[in-house]
Length: 409
Image (cartoon, rainbow, N blue to C red; front, side):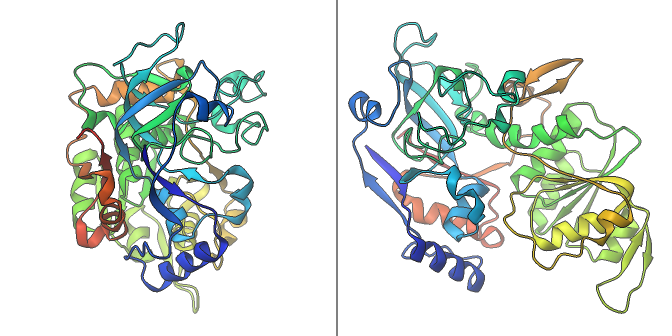
């Protein structure tokens, strides 16, 4: 089958990082260690990689491109994350597929349409649950590097399962959720980014009296605004966007106010903070927001988040970041802030019960009142992977939000 394969190459990784610093909006495929390849993919080859006979083989229909995929292509992943991957990687984890081969007793039949929750947690690996998996927090599983299956926290980041940017992929039945017949693939492919935004909301829900900043209006930021409204939050939501089309979508998703690349003084005014000039460092703020969701994960967004929070406010890192060199973090101790992160999805509290986040994401997407229109902006056949990645690299030029591969043809 044909699949986009990411190989381990330190020289190419560093070269991609250098190119990204010089040409941030340009994808340079000649440097990136990724290629469309024809590889074997059947029960025999999967067994050699530790995939048991109980796993499903899925025919991919659509697969979205995630920011974590771009981090690999930009050479921007943390070096500390290397043990949590295995190579060569079959790229792609935002998967809508149909069952091509379902073993007896799997609970699925050939032709069933599913989305895939990619996490390779204890139960999927056939292990007794670790302390986190035992309570459904499998996004924090302690066995992502267990030797029984190739290292990796999920499909799309390991050498065993293959990835969604391919014709076929392997998935455990526990990872698969049926797509309602009424839901088109173009909507179902948004389940993964919505779940990624929903998890931090379920874990860090603001009170209705709070002022909230959602910094970064890529697709995760867009879904975070929508997730706040979907769970019933009446908090005042201020969105920070870079591009006009992002601002328009943020307003449609329920943001009370949208700021376009604001100065610190402008951000302070929006969160009712008092601006305090400084000789160096861009100024400080007194007072501010109650919760800051950082959907960018850069040194600048980290510093803006900490500065714009009131005393005992909460900073939530949603965007993946490897380093934050140069950020001034004095507000962290000076204002006694809480700082936390979020990763993947598991379970969360909603409606007085503990719900599987991915299942809840599908439920919200199926609600006609949920503002999903305009979030999937581009689709490409797999052989146009260079063009697809370029459209994500250059959001300003392409006006891209969510870009996906379409393998249905």
